Length: 86
Image (cartoon, rainbow, N blue to C red; front, side, top):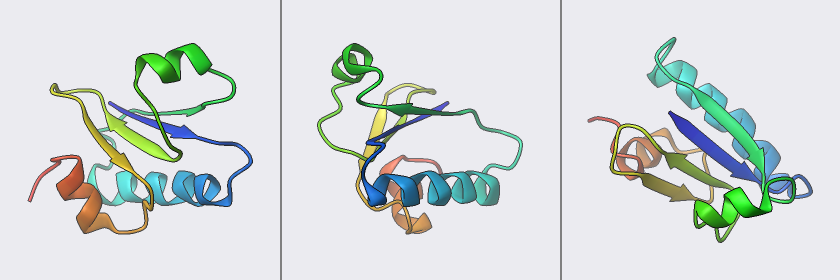
């Protein structure tokens, strides 16, 4: 289960949505859940997830939670940062 936190006004967040969806389809086709949330629309939940910047991608399952902040365009960095495989 992945959760992508974005800022609706930020161009980097819009690119993060596209890049994250492409990453998931390329590396986990049919084996992932992706939840996309706006920090502005879900302030309390973002605080609970300890989101301090956008975009932030959380791997919330399996535990432990892993987080990746920033540019989602490099698949190798995402795989490593989220501990999703070699």
